[in-house]
Amino acid sequence: MNSQLDPRTPVITGVGQVTASYPAAEPAMLLAEALQVAAGSHVLGQLDSLDVVAIGTRPYTNPGSIAAAALGLTIPRLTYTTHGGQSPQILVNRAAWDIWCGRRSVVAIGGAESWRTRRLLRREGRGTGWTVQDSSDQPDEVVGSELSMASDIEAALGFGDPLDAYPMLESALRFESGRSLDDHARLVADLWAGFSEVAASNPHAVIREPVGASSLLSPDGGNRLISHPYRKLMVSNNDVDQAAALVMTSYGKALALGFSRDDLVFVHGFGEAVDCDSFTAREAFTTSNAITAAAADAMAMAAATMDDIDLIDIYSCFPSAVQVAARSLGLPLSRALTVTGGLTFAGGPWNNYVTHSIATMVERLREQPDSLGLVTANGGLLTKHAMGIYGARPPVRAITAPALRRLDTPRPVVAETHGPVSVVVATVRYQRDDVPSHGFVVAETATGERVLLRTEQQALLAELATSEPVGRKGTAAGTELVDLP
Image 1 (tube, one colour):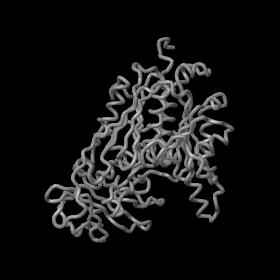
Image 2 (cartoon, rainbow, N blue to C red):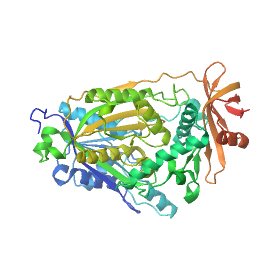
Image 3 (cartoon, rainbow, N blue to C red):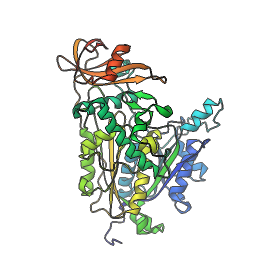
Image 4 (cartoon, rainbow, N blue to C red):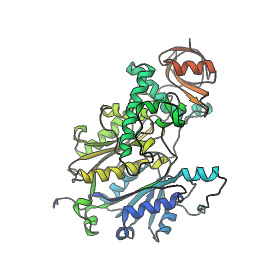
């Protein structure tokens, strides 16, 4: 034991994960189950705060009150977040600072989704019977700003779905590498096959059978095209019934609650940053200044470098998100980049994946007490970023207050253009029968502005999907790409 360790130092004392079978309980009840596992009976009654990650399955106003009631608890402070995959790490950062400052004592953080059960019940024509929460039941605080997925210009064209944006990032990565479509597809498949191998050993994963690269590229087994170049097994899997929670307190309080030094995992550092809110206006599509900056802040707080990091979980909603983050962090794709198996195979419960990745990281660090672990979180269209560094050994520096940095300088954007353009990124969306529905292109005009273009011409969609469109010259007519010679 480190007798010099400040008793205010924030620690994680327990974690809990639930992967339920159909029919699962409603999300608030799954959250209660995860909280029970994370806290145990001797800590549940000590909670002075419950921070809940936004739930997509059910329009609760304050799910923490339902979970608390199910556990027979009165928790003095209940908070709820806005949507965004960065939220769990943001909650950890806030809780760590509040604990250090003495504003909160024992904090639980968690979230849950019962999306698969909701989908199957609806398919069977059955109601859920889940809690209908009175609108008067409100949290004490809402954490985070509303998540914007598109600018007004983008929204007018129907853009803003991650299934459009992340495949477009993939096209930029492919073009910059100089790989052919087939060679790059194989690289991505190899990356995702490695993630599936990790999920196979994760007892909380929803897909525990390893999936080889060839299977990832094959249409067999319902692995249909979603957005070029991604098939179903290369995108986040939100068809899950999952919950995860963790409990944080101070080092001194943890010892008073009866935890041994070996039970505890410390928060060593964290960082937060945002990129440009408009996808079209992003400065770069293959790197992220915000990821680099958030990691640098976390490393500085932890007095660590990337060479000191032994375990990593990069937010993995799509392969492009992993590649951009790895490039921005200076990591090779050959390195182990997940501890869970990622959002396709471990499960992608909307905003709450990172609670699962932190929980798994805590378990791994208890097994490897001399290691440091890095968790990255991502919200929006690779827009909002948060990082956390964790370790079972005590930190060498005290944490500092969370600080959000804005790093991306927006490029000038026009709503429409006529005449020649140069393609910067592109993708094609598919219907369930593998027939293309539409395509999006971000292009540059002859005068250097960015413009978002849409096309539904089948010949152009085939061209976008079967040859390299990035770097090619085309013609725009208003908001439409009309040819790609």
